[in-house]
Length: 214
Image 1 (cartoon, one colour):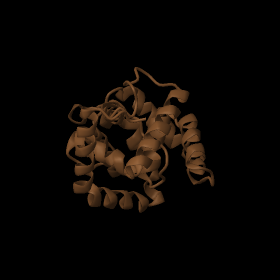
Image 2 (tube, rainbow, N blue to C red):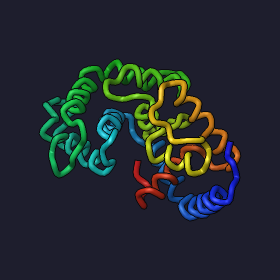
Image 3 (cartoon, rainbow, N blue to C red):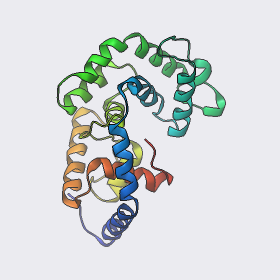
């Protein structure tokens, strides 16, 4: 529950002001996610494997290079791309192995993506089956293909939720139970502010980076 002190009120005013200014661009971006073709799902998941603790812009460039070399159809050791200093990806050795495992197991993973189940169930199954991602990255992937309803609790989101007193303190770490508790608190905050969670997610990102990426 949000505790309304003077600082929180000021942050809420800023939040609503920024939302109104960016609302149309945010909604247009979310509409683009809904139109991502299934042929791109593999590379969207590559992106989400690369992003943890790395710059989204670098992960985007890496994925474009993987596309150019047709990594999906003709797999190769991606380390030379993922480990490139110009587009630095942290833990590139491990992430390169994760990308190869994704390509190897894609048929099974694709079935999970297409399954007629709730977005929560799909998030959990992907976090369990895709090497190198957890609940956060699984939710990120689903958002990027237009499946909404689960939270992407990265450090930027958690920072803003803490500043807005949606959660009492920034968590040092999260197990599944804690993740779901914070997700529920954020959903309730979104209900009260009438800003959909996916829109608020992109709003927080734009406040951090000045861009509405993915």
